[in-house]
Length: 306
Image (cartoon, rainbow, N blue to C red; front, side, top):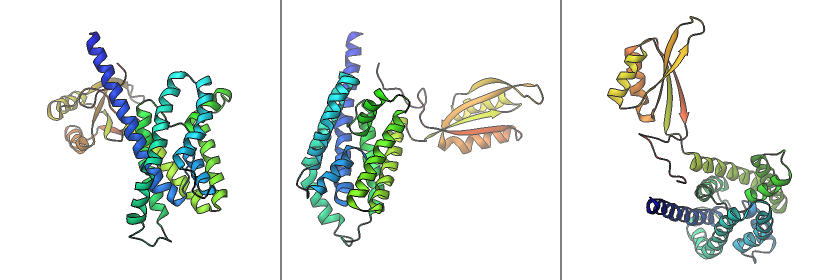
């Protein structure tokens, strides 16, 4: 048993390590290709680093600036948050900074010779870049967060501030910090357009992060109220091979007891279920809702800590 548990822990370690490395790589590519070249600063330490990079006439590397800015946050975090979390965060932050500076010559070559080549350099499609940049950044950060780490910046600063200001939630603090950084970048670059593009990038990245952490809408939950609940349940289990749970319900108008069927299924099975229920009982009542993630038999297993 000890060997099995050790193997599981070892597998989780390598899986989380891969997620941190690959997530940091994707985030670095997003920053180098879609953001820094076009002065899009969507909050966080990367946003501050982008502003400093241009104020220094592009002499200070963005990754190095990010690492320097994170040092005081590490020190405060080590004191107020905890050693284990800060150690994981420091690894992913150093990786991200190293990837940004290491990949810069290659990504600059790609931008100059491919992205700019097929469009007028003086009129880049910043809206498109903000969308793709936000998507790629959200995907990378989502993978890092999924591994139980962060890349420092706004979330680490928010955790520290939350230690002193408990009336504000983490989400509110991150929003305040990122908004302040975007505002500073807007003033520094003297462009409201760049500020608005940064907001688009920030919004998209946050939505992608949620999708990575919580799963995408790939399943449906259905509640079925019918006088022929037993027949419907039998047909669902036999024909569709899906589990059904009966919940006891009482119609408040009639006072009559009824079985309320709960069924979770893949989106592709939804039309088949509708037709099947209507065929058995045309007067049935159905409620359909989206589900972010389903864990269990017939879907996916939980792969967290054992």
